[in-house]
Amino acid sequence: TAGRWRTFGAADGLPGVAVTALAPDPAGGVWVGTRRGVWHLRDGRATPVRWPAGVAAPAVAALASDPRGTLWVGTVAEGIVERRPDGTVRRLTVRDGLANDRIDALLAERDGTLWVGAYGARGVARVRGGQVTLVGTEQTALGGLARAAAADTAGAPRRVRGILRNRGGTLWL
Image (cartoon, rainbow, N blue to C red; front, side, top):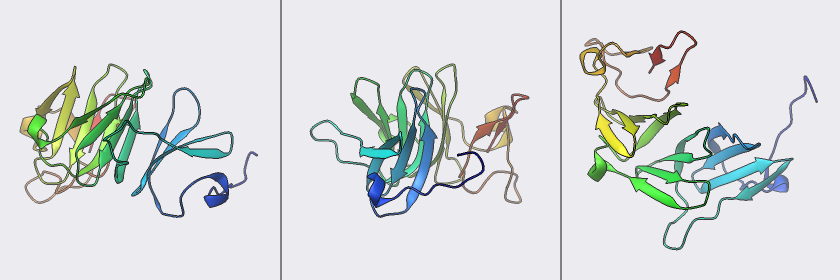
């Protein structure tokens, strides 16, 4: 109801642990991330995301969804898990070019680009067409594409915990 808070918890199907990330689902509902995995909340009921055999439920630090229905899961120590609408998954890690496997922030853009904020000073990466490009956080590395909301004395963020693009097109870290 407009103007009222509703709390969701174990009675609604969520685990009894802290929520670490949220993302809208373009098909309706909300993706809910916890250290025990991902749940999909829709019509007041949460259901756990099923992962293919051999893929453990990730400890979630960040979530993003794109218009095609792909869910991007930033994990505490295992890089990124890309879950496509058909349920197939792909993992991206330092072996694919990420600066760190601890992912603190994600932004999925309409054009298919995924911006990644990983732990550490050189932790910003761009994923486009399945390819990871490490761009760092220095203004010179980003080519003026982004602005840092909080930075150390050298001008680079110490850690990227959030990424967004404003209406004017500026990417904020």
